[in-house]
Image (cartoon, rainbow, N blue to C red):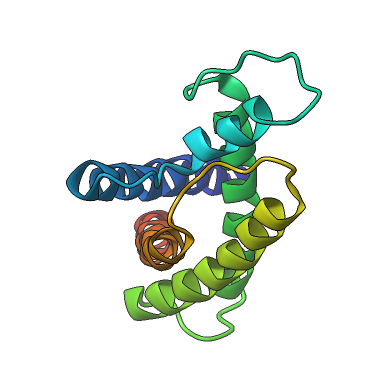
Length: 146
């Protein structure tokens, strides 16, 4: 039962976070969709003969897998009542997950030989807010089922 709830929270949290990023992308004209950016990293790799579209399953799979890993961390905080179970804690933990996300994306962009051309400042700011949405969503699902 725990694993089913974790999977549900992971999928819903990651999709709502990505929807938030996509909505901001549409409103601002910037590229924020994380799965699309992962696919662009694959497609832009020098020496790669892959022809990967922005909605390729590879970027989405990696994004969902990273979401699952983050949900496992949030589940530990929730399940073991490390710092509370309310939505404010979910938002705060989402903020810290966003900081981890910024670090991860920074490393990816730094190490990549031809990263997508995006405004990194705007991307990182929205990424933190997107992870706040993620944290609140995950804690909401946990509260509904536990």
